[in-house]
Image (cartoon, rainbow, N blue to C red; front, top):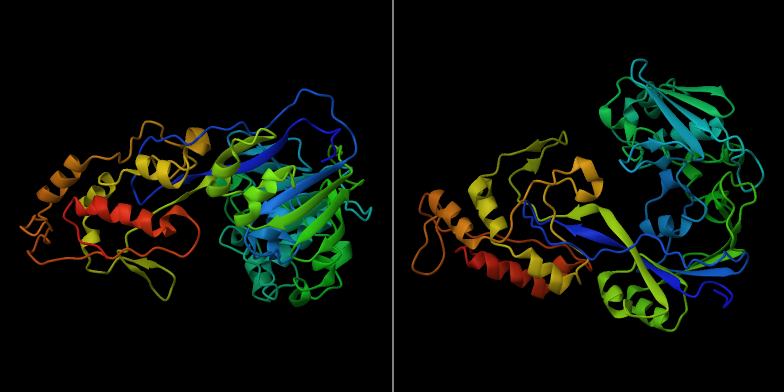
Length: 449
């Protein structure tokens, strides 16, 4: 960013919510503002330098319904945005590039596009683009991951997917800016924009209509020269590494003040050094380790919000059969509810998060994170550290403590549990962190490996 810009830049991150199985407590993650205002008059022009803290490169498929990698979503957000605004309770709000109205009696949803919304080549954003996006998502040849159980609630979409119809009968173009979606049934969660029933992005039909569905993801029109309806469009790109964005003058929303946004991938291991050297004005998606190294830099402000996410430690009590159904048919000690509860009460995640997550993670109190406001049961306490209660649960359930310090099953046989941890960069992938779990569970007389 040029010196005439803001006195301070911003360092953005999202906190994560950690939940190990059903284990929860009241540790609070660090609280950050979600925006920064330096109270100065905005300066038009200049370049915003953005670093995306991510291992690897972005694949560069600039179509949300065909994308398979998170890095591309991260770098694409300057041109590819959601069509909808969202209320504080995560329902559809008015004022986006498109508005949604739902008629539960008629089992239909109406999507109406903003009149002046347009693609970066000057063509208007139309209902035909919305219809085409559903066809791309539902066509078997594209292999889109967006074709899920929610989309299958649309009339005729399964027939289209199976090749029995050329069009999706449940999609009705009312006029150039209005698409009506007819559903077989309407579920209550359809009122949430990210529930999967209504797609939140669009693809340009006029630009892509001649590209075969099975060639779309690999086409130059999506990888080299994509169109966007968001505030920016691509001017230059080094595939997988960096993108130079410039304003899209046909964008239907508020025009950006900056003349250019330079976005560059940077590995997490080099992110802190880059920020100390003032290489970027903004760093997105930094991890806890980077945050810990740069949080005191005076030239940056730390912004963040709670992620709509939790990680968990689960118990394997069954399998998935050939029909994709969950079947509880394994004879295992963890089928005993008291054992699962005891293992939860044995963990001290307050201390765990402080040591391994730099205060950015905290325990959930239910499987609905508290970031969802009124949908979370704020009165639920969950499973704070309580070794006394944990041992009582096991005693009552018949798990007898033996002289060697380990318990036996209620039938008198010895038992051992196995913990599997995925590869990655999270706290549960640190061997020292895993040993903390083992130490706590050993206090219950549980043997693990």
